Amino acid sequence: MTSDAKTVDEYLAGLPEDRRAALSTIRTMILENLNEGFVEGMGYGHIGYWVPHSLYPAGYHCDPKMPLAFVSLASQKQHMALYLCLCSEEQSKKFREDYLATGKKLDMGVSCLRFKKLDQLSLDVVAQLIKETTVEMVIADYERARAQAAIDAAARKAARLAAKG
Image 1 (spheres, rainbow, N blue to C red):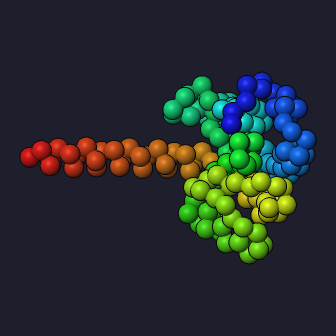
Image 2 (tube, rainbow, N blue to C red; image 1 turned 90 degrees about the horizontal axis):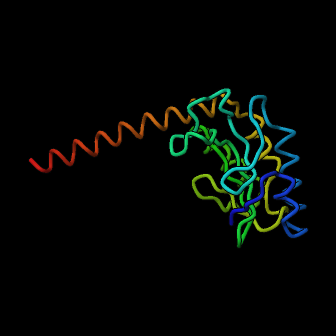
Image 3 (tube, helix red, strand yellow; image 1 turned 60 degrees about the vertical axis):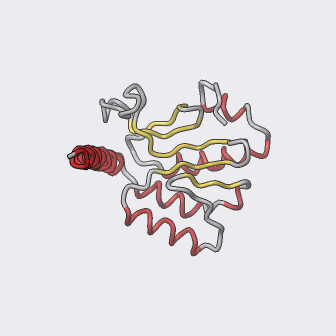
């Protein structure tokens, strides 16, 4: 569920009290652990933390007006969500292992961590991920992913051409 809110405070004010309290707590944790260089704001109808254009002028390839995303926080219809940039297979594996070691259920897709109540979220593990991730890591991961996408697209095109004979 996206919001038309223009500011983080406006977004939070528009939530039911239980979700406002949960997302405010998570927001505070993020701000306390966020490395220098990231900025907070609204984007895609969520609270977001990004690499600003001043540090990565090209922005996000699908919409270059948008900065590179690191973390987003949202209230969805059926749950709350924390969208995380996991910058490597190793970081992703460690995050998942550390999270599961807490005994809390990990309801996560590729990068979307879903929860219905704050106490279902392992704040310490999320805080550690945020604390250890730098702007440089997010940029390097993004550029690595874009380069791999270009290689994959070229391989698919070559395979199609080869199949045509």
